[in-house]
Image (cartoon, rainbow, N blue to C red; front, side, top):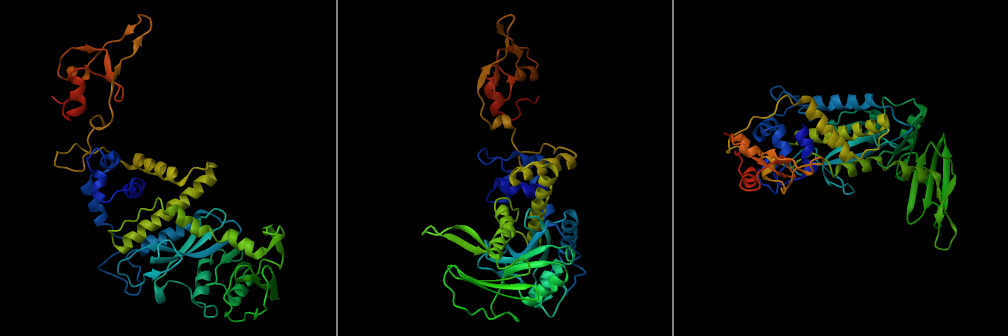
Length: 417
């Protein structure tokens, strides 16, 4: 797992390149943690379900155990702040898959779609649902359709707590917002004009003008800027807020519901942006393994949020991931790999053979005002007593300036008898 998390931090074209002995491409940590062949074998054998007893009604049976475990962990690890949001995210996958989706607006346009419930303030992922078409695992609510059912399924644990939900126009409807309001959950979102029970909102407006309708604690707003924007909210009034100046120097006003919507709906896009530089998904593995590694990346994002909240240390995600990898290796690596033969590509060359090395004088004895001669490590290994006043500045070992310095940095077995 740590190697898969480490790979995107040192991106290479092929998996084998992470264990190369080429001095221009060398990454010694991979060979020190695990041999290449063992990693490839473990990756090949990675499974999350019993293929001999598949659940034909569950398209995600190959990874169902991992999904259920992570959803439980996400929900139980953090209590959200007041504002939460639901949006789609897309995990890149261009292979053949029955439930592969296309979303034009996403960074990856083809792939596996996830519906994600996210805390707006911290971008912590509270829950998720993987979309598999008509077999998507949700609780059906006929009065709000599939989009509303997804919202109510994701919010099951968080209803009746006074949260404020932000969603886009695929989910928003008067019927859904009415149900949420009854369950002490406010909501705000853009809305399609053809939703059932929507007011007409047919007024012709000039730029900057707005019109509002209200009924049963639900406010419908239409505002004209560069284009018409229609909103539905159980949180806001028809209040307008000054948000800048026009080119003519006049105050520019926006409905408060639109300002709050723009502030809170970017949390999931933010997680996608953070994943773009650290995601561990590779092109060459099966879809369920790609889903697993994508969920692993989401777990690290959540761990990063909790770490910052608990410690107060605003550490960047990249540094946090490196720190996490090091701690996992230190805790679980029980032994160092044995030295292998020259045929094993996974064995790294010693750093003394590949780094930059220059001779320098050893330390000076200040009292005697002369250099402190030390035994050459190469001569000593071959039982020759010879002292030198030179050393390698990089390796910090005493070496005879002639022959031994060159041997030590060019011959792999120079220290072997």
